[in-house]
Length: 157
Image (tube, rainbow, N blue to C red):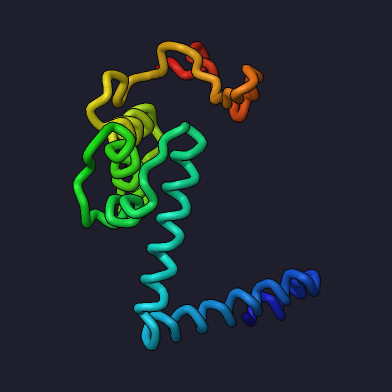
């Protein structure tokens, strides 16, 4: 802090408030870690479940609601392709969470994450070979584009 005084550094008030808030929340986080680890574990599990479910739903992958939590938390083995994708996505998240500080963003890492997510499918760990817009078909024949992923040509290694 003395270096700030010697060099007469002036910080915007909103930056000082933000730094103060960070320090305050860090203290609260450490308190929760010591006093309420079960609350944090429950919040972590809920966040993982929501993330995995939402990300897979975008791709049209769904499972029975009573199967979702056991699959994501590793308490159940997948029974079909959709369940394999749910479990694989969770494995990819595990890799990211465990190695976030050393995991390099390289083509090999991207392919490994894809392999984990896709499991035993034919394209697991490979670059995209064809375009795949995410669409919804309505009973009246109408088609709605929900999501447009990057095209196959732009993904080759």
